[in-house]
Image (tube, rainbow, N blue to C red; front, side):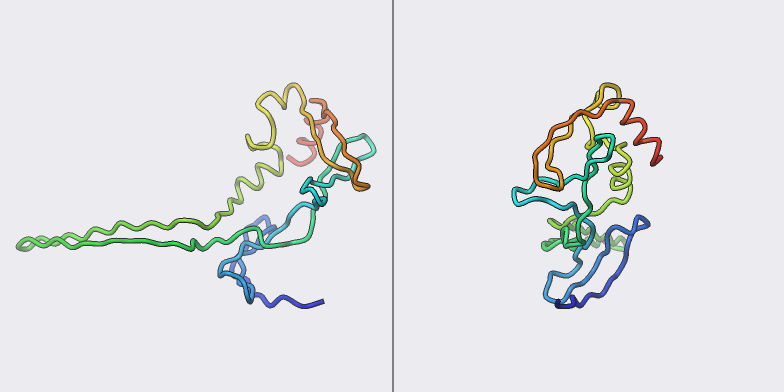
Length: 153
């Protein structure tokens, strides 16, 4: 197994991501946790004894790059008698950003992207594959959803 040479620059309080320079990769790699997926890209779940699907956490990998590959800027100076004014307009395009707040909100199911608007009150449906590769679709009842949230909040 080849060892990856890295230089870690920073990590959030959640400790699930590092801003890292990996030899041979673009500068500023966002290196963090991922989900295990099958060959079709579906998230693999472990099924709790009560039937609740829990996504399997996978190996750490490059999730994106935080340093934007494109930067553009223009500046100008205006001078009239004793008055001097400088203007700078700058933009950066591309690159990804990691939000620890969004990550924690998604982890606890409190982010709007994690569940339909009425899912907290009426339950929700989860589809995926289990560890054996069998496809499943199951409904999570509101009581189970509240139990999961109370466990982690």
